[in-house]
Image (cartoon, rainbow, N blue to C red; front, side, top):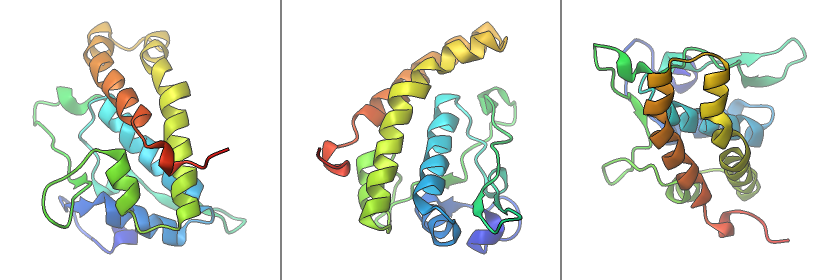
Length: 173
């Protein structure tokens, strides 16, 4: 993402709005890539992982020419790190501050409306089907009990955030 955003070097702050829009510009399937990118942000927040710098997400061009996100890597409960890692990529608003309100994020992203609708549906679905199973999945994979328990509140918080996505962001039947 650092190269894609034209931000070389380390310890660079970046707007997730700009990164998301740039990803949509180059991805073969913008809706799928953006939805995956945003779900990864939700997952980082649910797992209390502030280590979301520009080099923790990559884009690849496959042999068939498809441009997409690489498989997920370097994710974990970095709240445990003694160096107190802080987020360097966030949903920075032009007027100042940051947001974690998905309705605001979806509204302000400069994407085609059909992409926004698909992304809203994917986020809501992620919050309804996958995120509720996260704590159990961690337990099944032998994650430390104290980590799972420490993340249960943030998992529930992220589920609530996704459930709050406006129905106006999704198509009516």
